[in-house]
Image (cartoon, rainbow, N blue to C red; front, top):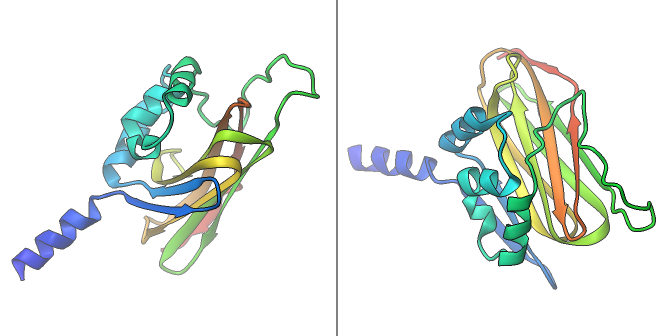
Length: 194
């Protein structure tokens, strides 16, 4: 019995990664572990690149990604999602500027919170990424999920079971590489009664 319990604890500490192949791309969705959520809270607001963030928090999202894409990630500053500001727009004519729509939300159930996000780009990208951060009243991340692929659309979702009673909201953040653009969204707060 003790061996079964230890096995279940070990399995629970492994990030959940799912991948689905389409005609020309692989979709990777990851539900963050408690350790990854802790790293997100430690890094939140720090002055790092997207590449630094991905390598420290979500290295599984970089498996199979080209060196050129990873190099560009290391050249771009991480813009932390904020409900009051968006990343500065790039100075390019509208005709060649890709736009990225990012949206996220949460649903309250009696025993859990389901949350997720999607990113949709006006042009097909060599890499498109979205991450959904479930935040509590203190604006601390309590759950995260991310998705990546090539193309113009990606989504991700996750559940947090029995979180403490209180208000929760979702920060959503996404970016694309080639074309390069970013976007974020902040959902309304909803109350979980526990």
